[in-house]
Image (cartoon, rainbow, N blue to C red; front, top):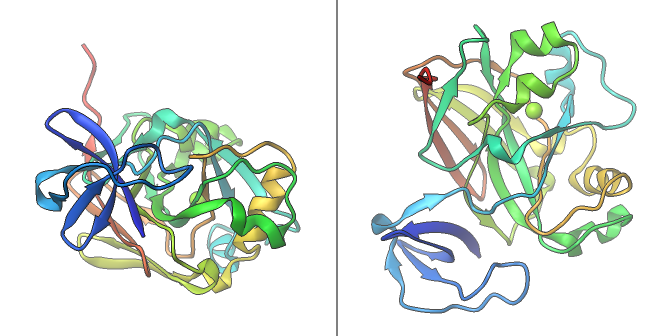
Length: 256
Ligand code: MG
């Protein structure tokens, strides 16, 4: 099942994508999934980020070749950091490059959407707490990441957490292709089987530190091939079995 959030005539609803139509849901998708109302052509709605995370936890250096390309060691335990909910944008929205950075990078990632409260759960029981999977771009101001020495500012600019286009609920995350294209050219092409720490191990590790709530989002790290995006680019993140997340890139407008 593909769960989306969409806007139609000013109303925002959750829905299920079926072919080229969206069936609206009665409620948020954390409990029972109950259709409510008539199907609408997908072409008529605006897809939004497929949920509203209370928090976003991300994982650094979770693919060996990516750790190596930035001159880093493979970590002995997961390196986690957070991105703010204000960084979220949806499919079709625009990534804005801020004037503080001259080197904004794409990072294509598999993202996990929590469906049931998750606190101190062993890896073998994590699947019960996952609603599904989506595509994400962990947009990063690489120069500021180095300059600041810690990662918060570089990862947290408004628009730096595009995800979507929907949440795929029927998927095994163990061996999926993760691809990034910029203007149609392939920049990253990895497989989730090459993760240093698997999805269940990551979520269990995070949930040992903080309670994960329904709608929280976990970004699982990026494969090698990260590189710059600049105003005018179109960046696509594709995860096998899910779909394609497309976002244009522009300069951040000056607030007057
Ligand atoms: Mg990342």
